[in-house]
Image: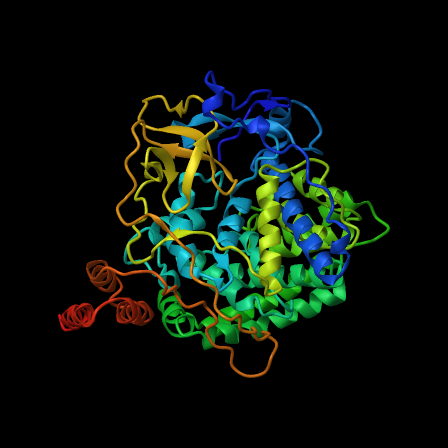
Length: 572
């Protein structure tokens, strides 16, 4: 990333334009957090909701704070903060869009790709569970258009998933098999927040989420470890210390059977990985699990309750080599560092400040993960300042809590996967529909500034917008935006099914595929169904989904036409 040089401690009217009534200025957004839950929230259900809220908020707060110090040295950090201590949220300036991009003023509390992708995961979870197809086919390909940061693996994976033939469990972009960074671990918290029993029922969703973008066991094992430590915090109200972390790390090795037992992962994905690497996946998983256990032993051994937190964390950083370029964003080491820091810190604010000031490490991701852990614990207060879009974050936290408790909860609206076409460039996600600006896959947005910021040649611009559901985006656009792609209209979410009890990953026996069936409550056009089947001709699950849709919603003639088309393609 290109470093920024200017801090903006106060930004009055940052998003105000000359025709202010046409916009929704950022300064009119919430500047303080809503109050604590009322007296009704004193029971177990209310306590779970409060912990989830604070975990969500502190994860975003840590991300926003660590974003300021990410990928700069001490001198660069001083320029970004104008010499102010990095212990509170502040506005600052950075370049977006690379060398040919623009300098943008980021408001205080602005979060990076960590929270952006976390919220993309959250939106993909509904009353019927985690819809990995929606996440992989819609959320991920759209994300680069508004990404603030992001690892190479996540961006390459997102770009590849924009292809109509892409499959979430066969996302074989160049180098996918070696992608072992923390881009998966940083976003998987919503699976834990929606867990009903916090006993491992979230693990398969964590794994399927992770393989959408990352192929090396280091990324997946790290995501599983962070998920398990977060579940421990939510369940017990305390951060796991040495013994508990050791037991958690040891148990991650057993999660391999979830991969093996999954219909697509156990055959297709593992087969592709072994073909690409020439290794046995079982051996690589076990070796990575052993690495995790060693890292836990090394890091947790540095935790000393009588020592200054900053000094203890510096020892953890040195012990794990978190300033070494090859290990800075490790999927396993950073998750271990986050829990070691959380175990040492007395308060959430102390933990995220220490992580954010550890210049040369992956500051935003570690601070965000540590914030998620500490926010879920007993005694955690609300952040001292509100992260950006706090009301939206809290609504999502409450929605996920409702899902975890089997209560009615709204699901987000998406285009129908059968007709969806992902934007092929970052600048094509912002479009016009019914006279208003819309983000493909996410829905209508409102402008927050009178003028977009154009790069030097004027071919592209970046504009602040806010979605109908309350998320603020700095999105890349063309001078003249295109109309909404045909077939990309938002459709009603699927009707909730009877919620099935998810088996714990620690239960005996096989655990099958828990991915939610596709919604089948919408109409269907046979031409769209045939084209979708042809695009997914090598994917048995997608073909079965298409046949079922047409069998239920179409005519006998429609079904015959679909089956004939599939038969012809298969025989070519």
